[in-house]
Each structure stands twice: as structure tokens, then as C-alpha cells.
Figure 1 (tube, rainbow, N blue to C red):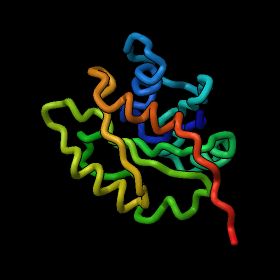
Figure 2: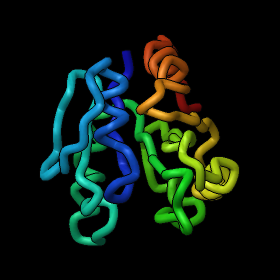
Figure 3: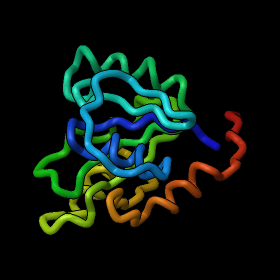
Figure 4: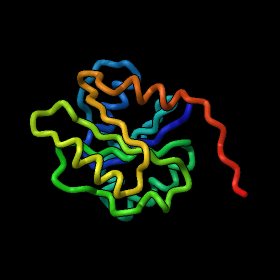
Length: 149
């Protein structure tokens, strides 16, 4: 199983996704510090929103196999600049959250994640469970790392 760090702004659904992936009851609580949950690393949104705190994300990403960039389908803008995944030396996937909300625009969020450089994008609704199994299956895949020539 691959270990994944979840990155995204406050209230985009990182902790709720962590609860859904672990099969726990969904309940809101503000993440105040880096939380390790077996194969998941849940980070506070402020780390992605603040340039200085953002440096900690780079350090914590070294403990993960996959970086999950989360973006709510309800966002009016993207936190991630174009091609930002080129700076990451881990596999980076996009995760569009809150796709079940009435004002959701999953296609827009996915296009922003593609622009950031995510080649694989998952669509999830943590409260209903939609898309959760696909993400679990992906993390369970046993893929051998590519060798550089």
C-alpha cells in the first residue's frame, strides 16, 4: 500500500477524506498539526496557504509515496499554480472533493488540477462514499518504480 500525503487549502476536505478512507464516521474537526494515519498524512490547510509554512509540506512529502493535491469542486479559484507538480519528486495525483454538493463544478476543479500537472485525477464525495473505493484501489496497486536511464 502506498503512503499518501494530503495537501490542500483549509476546508477542502482533507480530514473528511482521511475519515472516509479509514472507514470512520465523518465528523468535522480542524486539523491543527500534521496527523499520521497508517498510510495517510493529513496536513493543515494553512501549510498550503502560507508560503513559509508550505516549506514543511516539502519535508513531510519525503515520508510519502504519493502527494494528493486536493481541490474542492466548490472552489472559485485554484490554489495551485500551473505546472507546480514539476517541482515534486514524488508521484502527484489530483483529488476533486465535495462533488456531491449542489454548487459543485468538478470539471472546473479537474481542469485546474490538470493545469497544475496532475495526470491522474480522482473524484470523491467523502460523505456519500462516492469515488472512495477507486482511490483505495489505486493506493493498493503494487507498482514498481521506474528506473531512470
